[in-house]
Length: 388
Image 1 (cartoon, rainbow, N blue to C red):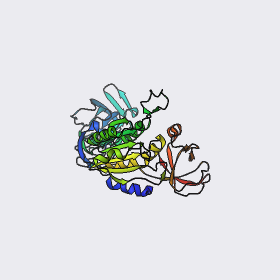
Image 2: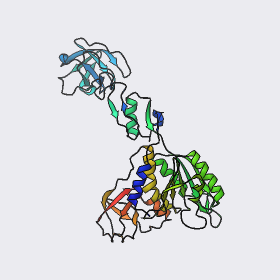
Image 3: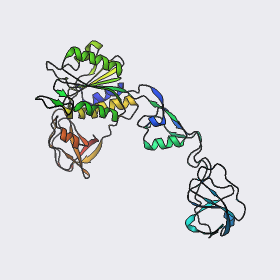
Image 4: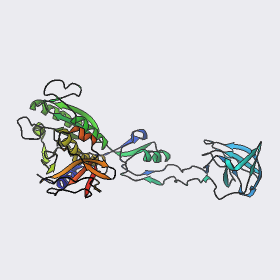
C-alpha cells in the first residue's frame, strides 16, 4: 500500500497528452491548446470610434461644422474630412481620414445639417488600428484551457480552427448484481446505479469524452468480454466496485486475460483505500470503490488528475489554507479526506462521513486534507482544503 503523494507521482508519469488534433472553433470549448494562437489580422483593423458622436478635426474646434455624412460599423470606406466638416459616427465605425477625435453626442448641439461644438476635452474616443493586437501577435499560449474568454480572443484573431490536445476516451464500468437503472429499484436488494453517472460526469468535467457506461453483473466471463470491448473503445477504463477480496470481487480479474499490469493496487487514504491503477498495453485502467461517496472522493483526488493530464490540462490539485468553523476529531493511520462546505469564510466539516452518504456528498463542495495520525483540530485552526 502506497501513500497518496506516491500515487499522484505514479499518475503523473502516465498522465501525458494522447496526441493533437485540429478542431473548429465551435468545438474548442473545454479543450487545451496544443500550440500558441497567433492573430491573423490587426484588431481593430483600422481606426474606429469608441463612442457614438461626431468625428471632427481638432483644428476646427470650437465651432459650427457642417455634417457631411454618417459612418456606421461595417463600412469599408471612410471619407476625407475637409475644413469645417464633421461626420456623424457610431461605435465601431471607421473614423474618417483627417479626423483627430470623436466628440460624444451628449456634448454636441445638432442644428439641421450643422453641429455646434465647444472646446475639445482630453478624450479622443478613437481606438487606433492594431491597438488591441497586431497580425502575427501571439495571443494565447499552448496549454491554455479554451474557456469563454479564450474563445473571444481566438475568434477576434480571425482563426476558424485551433490545434488542441485530444480528449481521452473513457469507458465507465459499474460492477455489482445489486445495481439497477435509476427509477427501477423497486425490488428488495436493488440499488440505483448512482456511481457510474457521477464518475462519468466527473471525467467529462476534467476533459474526457465518455464513450461507454455500463452496469455489469458479477459474472466473470461476461465481465471479461465487457472489459475487452471497453479497452478496444477507450484510452482509459474506469471500473467501480469489486476491488475487495470477496468471492465476487472481479474488478482486476476481468482484465487479466487482456494482460493487466498493476501500477499500484492500494492507497493509504480514507475513504478510498481499494483504489488501483493499471495498464493494458497503451491503455489505462482505474479501479474505484463501489460506495458512491468513496468512489467520488477518490475520483476527485486521483481520477481527475489522471484525466486532466491525458487531456493536457493542469492536474487541478491546488490546496489552500482555510480556518475551521468548528473542531474536528483526530485522524486514523490513513490520510483522510473530510467532506466539508464553506460556512461564510470558514470550513465546516459534515458530521456524516460515511462512505455511502450520498445526500452529504451532494452538499459537499470542499475536501479537507488530514495527514495520517493528525490530532483533533480546534475551531479556527487552518487546514488544507480543495474544491470538490
